[in-house]
Structures are given as structure tokens and as C-alpha cells.
Length: 438
Ligand SMILES: Cc1cc2nc3c(=O)[nH]c(=O)nc-3n(C[C@H](O)[C@H](O)[C@H](O)COP(=O)(O)OP(=O)(O)OC[C@H]3O[C@@H](n4cnc5c(N)ncnc54)[C@H](O)[C@@H]3O)c2cc1C
View 1 (tube, rainbow, N blue to C red):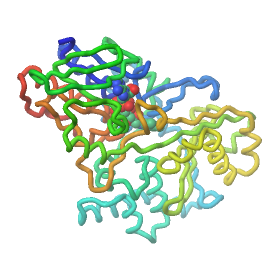
View 2 (tube, protein in one colour):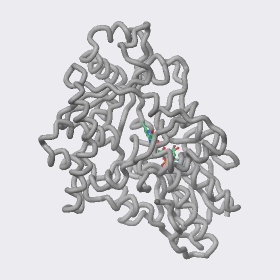
View 3 (cartoon, protein in one colour):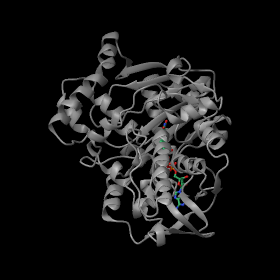
View 4 (cartoon, rainbow, N blue to C red):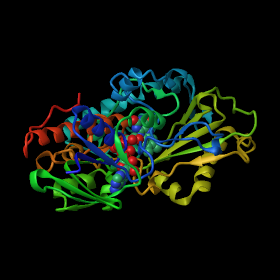
């Protein structure tokens, strides 16, 4: 054997798995298709935005009070920015600011929406997220909450997202940003001492060999391991980029199909003049929406920088991403123009712009997993060990309650590693290890 455990992918799940294997004293090789660690945790320094650090994917440590990566950051003395504390919020109704009474109505809207969800889920095994807003048609803010919880946060339209899964993974707590970016944090703090082979995509995994052994073929040769942990996205699994021999059982394929990738794009527009649209630093703006209407919230002048950043999720994100950077930037400008008028064109004329495109990355193929209505058990099923614990799937799609996050990815990698280590030490059998799920 070349190694005890081979891990496919050096995103947060793969790094979490490799860290756990290494801590146990067993050997581990991580195969990474791209030329960097972190996967969807990637900090870039785009010249279009003046070279400042910019997270192309993940930004926040959600539920910071329980987030395992916050513990690592704190233990290593990393600075964490409390973006929740410095943020101000402006909500628009049509093209004007919401009145105080309207803002009061909006302030309680999430709780009303959640109560409506719980009432429906008490009567139904599952429903599409859309049914929640439809059940409270007289609530003027229900569609706005749906726009946030569906396309923006769950990166999928509400009629195609499981309300049960949404409820299982609704996160509380505060959101922290590691100073310098989450991708830089992962690269600096989560890769030390690991044997990571970059530019080495796995192409075929022969699993269930003698003693559960796995043989992984790559463009750079073959690796034989006692156990294999696969952490690629459900988008990559669905595309069949990695072949499995024997083919994966129907339960895995069904889970992958039930957890398709959703998409969100970030559109950053850099201002060229002194105008700041009369908005304070780190100002979030959103707008009351109707059901099915696209909401594009903006974060303006984050950390005092000279750009605004819009976020679009769901079908509109796929459409704009395919249409290209100019179409996405034009859409964002149109939204800003409706609120601030022609000064927007003067402010952003000739300024740099950046549009993220995770759908075009062949090693990711979207932003993060969504969950089809009626399939809220798919995350748990995808994480079920194969070959007596010698072949495991991990990654954000496999975790609950931190689905779709860096924390969920990290914890699912660690869970998979525990099972693999148990399988390695107890021969061909394993007993399910206690999971990290609270
Ligand atoms: C725009 C955006 C915003 C987000 N915001 C947040 C946020 O604020 N907070 C948060 O917690 N999460 C956020 N997320 C989600 C978070 O980034 C992901 O949930 C998490 O990073 C996924 O980690 P992972 O290890 O499961 O998968 P990945 O990060 O995708 O890692 C998988 C790795 O496998 C590699 N790979 C693929 N195919 C192969 C192959 N054949 N062989 C070898 N390697 C391969 C890939 O290159 C990749 O590096 C965001 C994501 C996006 C896209």
C-alpha cells in the first residue's frame, strides 16, 4: 500500500479528513485536481478591485460560537472581524426607504416565516420551501424572507428546495470573517504537515479490494490505500468525472441526484469617484420583493473599501453567469440605478468589476448543494460508509446541520476519517463512530 488513507480533494472536507488521519498517526495522501488548497474557500487578490483580498467563495464562519474552524483560528491567534457588529442595514420598498412601521414588520418576518414552516412540517413529511410563503399570503414580507432563504442562502429557487432540509440546517449564532480572507486562512492554517498532491485529479477509483483496499488512478500514477475518502462536490460526482469500479450503488447515485448544485454569483463593482451613494461603510441594502422576483442584496463599501458587492442566487445566477460578466454587471447596475438614479453610472463608469463563476469551474460546478423536496435524508445517506468503512463520501453536501458551509465540510471530513480509521484498525468491519453532529 502507498498510504493508509487517500483523500480526494483538498477543500475543507478533505483537509479536515487529512488532519484527523494525521493526528491518529496513520499516513494520508490528499489528491487535489487544481493547483491550490481550499476548494470553494479561496481568497483572491483581484486587480479589478485594487488588489485587496477578496473571497471568491466562502466568506463567513457561520454560527461562530460552535464553528470548529473558529476554534482553530482562535487557537492560532488569527484575527476575526465581527462584520455583524459594523454592518448597517437599509431596506427599500419600491424605490424608497422602508418606513419605521414597515421595518418593524420586516423585523419579525423571519420568525413568522419559521413558525409557518414548523406548522406545515408538523403536518407534512416535507414540502417545497415555496409552500411556506404561500401559506401566509397576507404577510407583506413573506416573499422577501423566501427570496433570502431560497435563492440567496440556499442558492436555489424555493419551489425546488426542501423545507425540511432548510429547517434542519438553519444556522444561528454570529458570523465572523477571518482577517485576510477565509481561503487564505484555510491555506495558512489547515494544510500544515499534510501530503497534498496538486494538479492530480483522480480519474478512477477501484474500491472494495482485498481488506477493503482502494486503488485510485490519476494522471500522475496510481495510489493504493487502505481506505478512500471522496470529498468532491455533488456537481463533480453527478458529472461522472471520477469513475467508480464497481459502479456506485443506487443509494449513492440517488443521494447525489437529490443534492444538485445550486448557484450564487458575486458581482463586485468598483467606484471611481468620491461618491458613496450616501451610504455608510459596510452597509447592506435589500428590498421588499414579490414571490418569484429576483432579490439582489448589496453590501456596500465593505470594511471601508471602494466597491459594492451584489449577490444573486438561483435561476437568475445560472442565467447571468452563462450570459457573461457584462450582463451580470449590467443587471447589478440596473438594480442600483433604480434606487440611486444616474449618479450610479458616473460612480462606476470605467471602474473595475468582478463576477464569480463557480459553475464554470470543472472541479466544483456550482456554489453548494441544494436539496430537492422529499429528500431531506439524502445528506445522511450520502455519508453512509461503503465497503465496510473503506470508501466514504464527505463534503458540505454530507453534513447536517452545517450543510453548504466550510464548517459542515470540515466536520464531515473528520467524521469520515474516524470511520475510515476504525475500519483500518478493526479489519474489514466498523462500528459507526460518534458523529460531530450536535
Ligand atoms: C459564492 C460562495 C459563497 C459561500 N459562502 C460561504 C460562507 O460565507 N460561509 C460558509 O461556511 N460557506 C460558504 N460557502 C460554501 C463553502 O465554500 C463550501 O461549503 C465548502 O467550502 C465546501 O468544501 P468541500 O470540501 O465540501 O468542497 P470543495 O471546497 O469543493 O473541495 C473539493 C475539492 O475537490 C477537488 N476536486 C474535484 N474533483 C477532483 C478530482 N477528480 N480529483 C481530485 N480533486 C478533485 C476540487 O478542486 C476541490 O478543491 C460558499 C460557497 C460559495 C461558492
